[in-house]
Image (cartoon, rainbow, N blue to C red; front, side):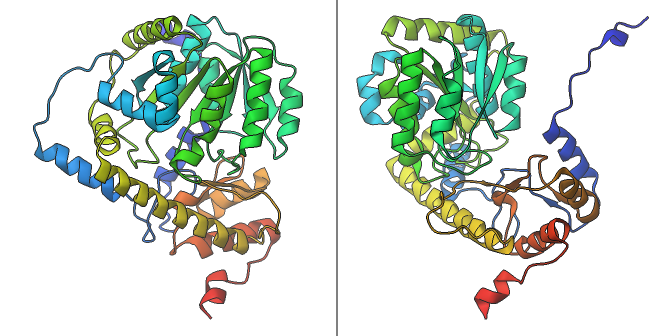
Length: 402
């Protein structure tokens, strides 16, 4: 008997299954609307000019090859802390803040969850729905029990459900534009959530997946900064994949704010141990690019300008596709931001789009605006409407050009 006969096979990840199907799909017209990789109007993956400039500087300089410490690059960690919390709060909470480099946003979340579950002996994580599907999988892999709460437009409904949470439960919140809904909370909402977490002794864990991709670098971090002021402790998991177009360099960070400095030092040591027994140390090149941009005033301003152009393009795509899909929002409704659009499609329609048209969306109906472009947006919307309504829309692009 082989030991492999005892293998317990885990539930297959949706994204991995879809990526395999997309790779095997030979249709020239296939369209991957699952990925958050930003494409230009020619359908080519786009790299921010500031990133290209910084990368070139590094390549022409004297590259060093050595192991980083488990916590990663000091310059990167300091720059990431300042980006996330802002200069003023870094000064206020300097001794209570610790940031460690992580392998991408997913790695940062896993570090945060492992730290909560093992070092803090946390048992239960509250996860908002609809949300990013991998949140649940990472939490379960870290050994936590999970509870879902409805992450709709009315934050008071969130609060009513979170009243059931117990002291020392953790609450996962998305900073900036939510994935997949595109909703951004106002300061008033963040203050309500912070007050509930403080009153009930809950630990906020904030997923900072694309800072700068919603309303701007500082506006997207508003929730994190409000929570930092109102809550004695919190954890932030940051990704630099989408906002720096560094997808395969795997650059992320986990930041912890504690009530007193001694806990920050202990948290850093615990995270170092978790990292050492997991992947030992992070990679350097992507972190050098992020640190190089954030620490150079000229490159930093160029990066902010690059991000502003991306936000403008995403907003234009959102407006066009909503009009094409007959989803033009009436005045007074909640504005949406970021990379994704949540569509209300039946499982059968999503299946038909994949099988009949080669158009791939997630099972929850999430559409990636990052993968749409001038060349495919009208065709994609027409095919979605065909299977959803049995008809095609009036071509929007022809309307605005006439």
